[in-house]
Image (cartoon, rainbow, N blue to C red; front, side, top):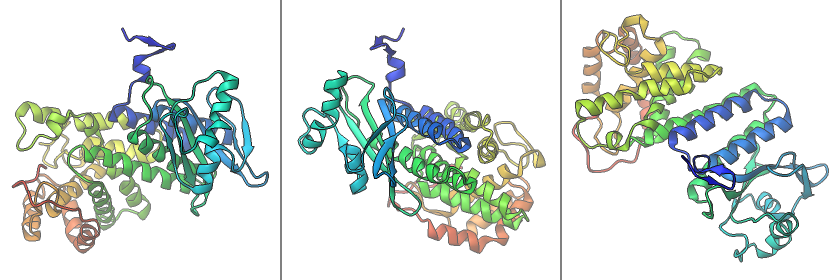
Length: 398
């Protein structure tokens, strides 16, 4: 049984795994995208920030230009607060546009005077004990600072916030700034979702020695192949936004398998293959069009035209066109791009493989489309090249 600490369980206070972090982001991204009431939107954002960094309290502050004040309609544990625009740590972070990171409010010297008239004074009134503090400003689409996230105290005992917490709250702050400004604009919300999807896709890839550029390339390849197949630009753009999530299920694959050098054993390969169904199960319940498409891509991008793929051994047109396109885009990138662990194949060798696998691994129509837009694909490859090492493995894992 988990032990209780201050009325909370250890499980509630422990750090999130990558898979759990992904679930938190997906859950709140969908809620925030559908919310139009400002107060409820800010409450969702504060809840998202608090869960991501496991803070005791988290608040979202906004600039009120008319009153020259900062205000938060929701702060965990307190009612609405209004302060002068330049007051406190929040005011300082908004004024400078830079994050503030404090390990211990009672021993910090850099912000001592601000803390004495702010957090420490409030502690004396409320008998609360402020320890670590993070304040992250966020910006509107014009680059102006419009507010800030403030997180107070890690739930996990006396430990302060760390660099990973700073990274997570910065991600939440970036999403919050854009969502707030575009709360009534569906297009802007979709753009924000796209950024989060690329970020989440990159999380899965980075655990398997890939870079964020891999998901960018696969997204662009998928877009060009879709257009070459005759898809509308709207649908091609949808696939472009969904395809970065193709390997998101890798967040749940053990490091011993995911990062193993050399060939996997049969048992390890079976574990690796589960990333398709894990990704599908993470995404399948979303009502958002992008994430529904991403669920299809995650599950089906390792299916083969001849029915010998996985996880469901689908064959031919039983495989969704999104899965067929992303399969070709993913393999094309695995072959044509330098990675940190292997050298790129020469173009003639890549094209020979696709010709050979047309009708076996790949949909022949998709292969024809890939060939027809090859100049566009190579331009994408060159635009998003990775930094590489001199130590290469002999063959890529496909």
